[in-house]
Image (cartoon, rainbow, N blue to C red):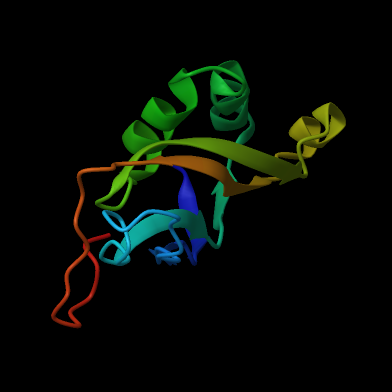
Length: 130
């Protein structure tokens, strides 16, 4: 069974502000500013056995990785995130360690995301849904 050793993921919030510097009188005032989901920072550290690691490797580098993450550790993107590109590193995954039944530790992190342009972040100071 895969163990979650660490999950420090949280969303990064960016703020778009219109400079309002336009050459014509029709667009002389700035557009309203808004917050948006800029990214996901942090990492997820997992411990797994060799067969789980082989299953993980079968899903790396393709669109199935997120589905593997959902099915294996019940992790879902926070609200405002449509998709993400993941990076990973592994320690203990060398084939000869399988003989000694050593667990493999895989660290996952988000490299890039696609934000939902229609998602509005809460304005009342509550925690973001994620």
